[in-house]
Amino acid sequence: MQENYYWSDDYSAEFYITAAQCGFITTSMYKEEKLILLPEIQFEYALMKFDEIKISKKIRKLINENKYELKINQRTKEVYKKIINYHKDSWLNDEYINILNSINDKYNQVSNFKFYSVELIEKETNLLISGEIGYQIGTIYTSLTGFTNRDKKYNNCGKLQLVLLNYYLKDNGLKLWNLGHPQLQYKLDLGAKIYNRADFLKLWYENI
Image (cartoon, rainbow, N blue to C red; front, top):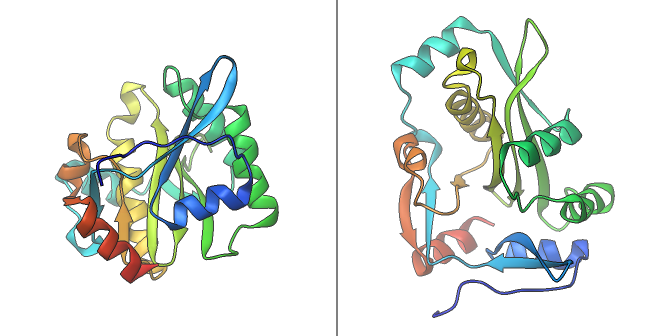
């Protein structure tokens, strides 16, 4: 219970899925030009119950304008590219993407694991405005990383994507949303609550 980060040079889909099933969120880094996977069992987690979401007036207005739609697993390669461009020194890299692709090719929806590419599309232009990647295990969805368009025209579209994803996950029978590290304020503003590791793991194993 004193440690949180571990490392592995096992790039197999089986290892990645097993770590995810145990509650680890795996990122990556390069050390001496070699990819190292970094499974983390966090000290604290931001968890959300879908009925507890907080929706601002600005987001309700965007929903009512009906200019955007949410799609799942339709433009995955484009989501990868935009995430890498959005984050400086992104841990999402070609080798990590290869692991995710191997899961999609062979293991998606097997062993209680389902990969998600989440895509907010502007209806008029068909542009991909905001998105993220994550996965479902049992009735829990875990967010990994995402992006949003920084153009002023698309202010609040990142938050809109999260709200529409909340509706989608709830409608598809999920029970909890694991937003990972609780330090980012937007997660708490959305309605997430902070759980320590022991309480997180109790909820985790009740819902996977």
